[in-house]
Amino acid sequence: MSDSLLQSHRDAIDAIDVEILTLLNRRAEHARKIGELKGGGLVYRPEREAQVMARVKALNPGPLSDESVAKLFREIMSACLSLERPLTIAYLGPEGTFSQAAAVKHFGHAAVTLPCASIDEAFRVVEARSADYVVAPVENSTEGAVGRTLDLMVGSPLSVCGEVVLRIHHHLLRNGADMAGIRRVYSHAQSLAQCHEWLNRHLPAEVERVSVASNAEAARLASLDPQCAAIAGDAAAERFGLVKLAENIEDEPNNTTRFLVLGYHKSAASGRDKTSLVMSAQNKPGAVHTLLSPLAEFGVSMTKFESRPSRTGLWEYVFFVDIEGHCDEATVNRVIDALRAKAAFVKVLGAYPVAVL
Ligand SMILES: O=C(O)C(=O)C[C@]1(C(=O)O)C=C[C@@H](O)C=C1
Image (spheres, rainbow, N blue to C red):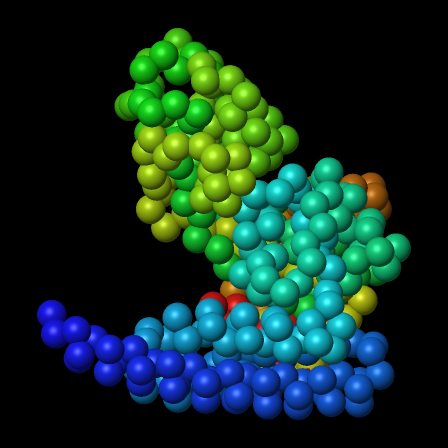
């Protein structure tokens, strides 16, 4: 390697960094002025962020990947937004959970994340305006719906204004160098289920599997007792200084969790949106088919359908339905009116940009 060639590239990088710095601060100045125009109110604009991300991905000439570029712009916008007003995001804690990773993925590192003891508490702090938004898990590709989040959304005054899709990688973590002598494995029940086959194949049957409130709590417990291991993700491994004995041990390689962002905020249309609804139908043959018929009539696609027992006793079941498009768009608006005419109860949970990252 020629030292002078290396130095010339480093000199070029130094010069470019000065330009980047100038441009970033010019961008931040504009964001600050936008913040003044907004008067400190609703500073976060999910539809605009989705458009900025989609645009830079489309314009990206490489060699950086579109994903890298999107991640960089996520952080740039996060820093710019924090100049307007720093946001506080509630999530199911403790620190190091996948919910925290989802909050950071969506709002960037400039947002303040607030760990809560339960999904209920995370909703409550936002409802009480002690935090700006809650990021809550709603479904996992292996384990299905997160019932508590669905149930809370039915009665909450908060609206869905964003979604986050997070690939979930689980690792076997320990305060020790190898697998010998592990007596117990801690994890959240869903994660134990997601790694069930791997555990059967790699650990003796007598190793106890203990479910705890979160993966981060599992990592904390494992950090205290070398005879115990935990199944958790990267953030928890880092937070508790544990060794990764085995990486990516989830049985389903595409294991993904979808989270929703909720607040006292309605997102405007971004051009690529979803609308989430919850509605009721009577427990009669064909009732669901009749209820959903307006979607076919208006040619609107459904991206999710989930049924839950009704908790009010007024109806037998409630149905959570996601459709393509924003509820302010004419066709989607007409579909919702048609659904209202058929269902005893329809609530628009929110409309929001499809996850870009
Ligand atoms: O366009 C705005 O409304 C801004 O506040 C600027 C900006 C950005 O950095 O691009 C920052 C925060 C918003 O959530 C959206 C975009």
